[in-house]
Amino acid sequence: MVSPGDIVVYRHHVCEVAAVREAYFEGKDYFELHALFENSLKLFVAADEAEPPTLRPAMSRKEALALIDSIADAEPIDEEALKPGANTPTLLERRIKEEYDKCLKTFAPQDLVPIMKSVHERTARRTGAGRQITATDKKYFDLAENLLCDELSVSLDIDRDNVRDFLVERVKKAEARRC
Image 1 (tube, rainbow, N blue to C red):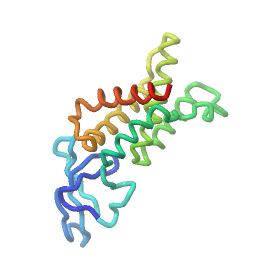
Image 2: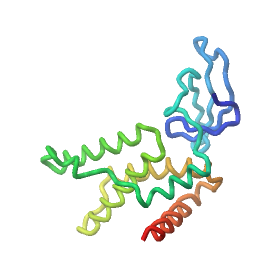
Image 3: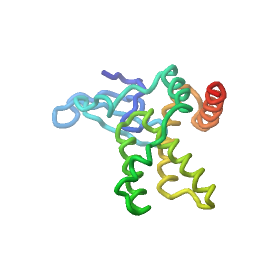
């Protein structure tokens, strides 16, 4: 059960529980959530529907650092597994997009990492071949990165604008230790 003042993640929105509204709508209790990184966004979530993974506490500092440290060893989405039956590049791109969507729908921060790793690898291959990042890859990378950075900002008590630099630096250190 959450209480006013708690920091939670509802779907992918990092929010503060502003109030518990008793018998707010149709006799049900609701949580009033204020998004921390989306100005003036208020969400009302029925208390009986506010269960993980849809609504969960924000990661602890320890969980956030463990997640960051696991990025170096995380696997990207398995593109090879998507290729059978994908006769055209367009069909393969559609399957990749579906995998990105699947990762997002879990609402779990660790499922954002495969999206980011996949896009990073795909972009490196494409630029090596003289091509640009696809619009789909850019969209999903930006979305995954922003969602992850929002939660890490709260979990690590770092200003949102500094999270990306912290993340990159910590992943580089983890990769160096691995080698």
